[in-house]
Image 1 (tube, rainbow, N blue to C red):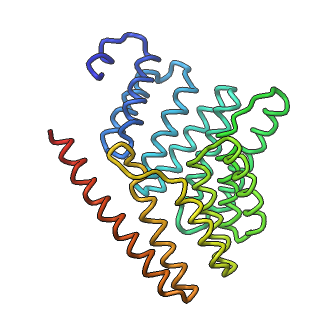
Image 2: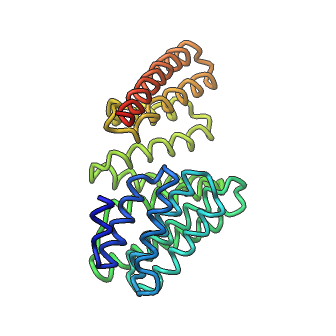
Image 3: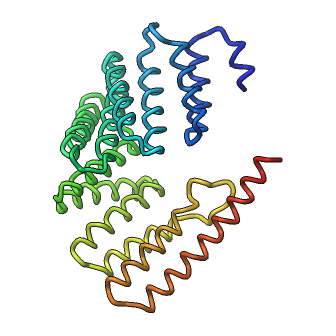
Length: 272
């Protein structure tokens, strides 16, 4: 694939290729080299939409590395490039990326900035939908989840719940299983804050019922079931239900063993 890319003369096609390779390996440090190759191909040539996409991918890389300073830096660069495109969808995604960057800063000092960024992206989406008929339910659902999370971080739980329920309705209507799981996990937190332990557990069981069996082909799902059962064990401990807590902890440990075995198989697959 890389050898093929090096033979291409069109800079935009070449940049897209490097960007896609980087995105496919986004958890690996070498992905930054591929993103930089992509930027080098289109630097100064006015391909602002492609630039914005590359910068958002670089921001996602640093999010995975928990490097919050660089995550914010590249999200801001993505927004600057997006605003040059006059492409509203691109700008919406860039504002959303910046909101994610601010919300991930662990000190909570930038939660209001995250809310402003998310609010801007959602308002722009609703305006675009109203004026042009543009519709992207997956993006709309993500925006509702994110603004709900921002309100949760700001201790405005009822407003958070409203946005998360809006997102859940969209996710169920459109069968966005991954986003349904996200909604249930965040709604769990709102119930825990109210000490509604059974309701919190019910949300997690709803999420668990949607998750597929883990395998070599779905690495991104490996930790979901483990995380859910460990969280369920914690909830039942808080609710003074030791039997249920022990059962969930046992299932969580079994899921962890599966992850360990899969990681060995995955590493062996890479070596052969």
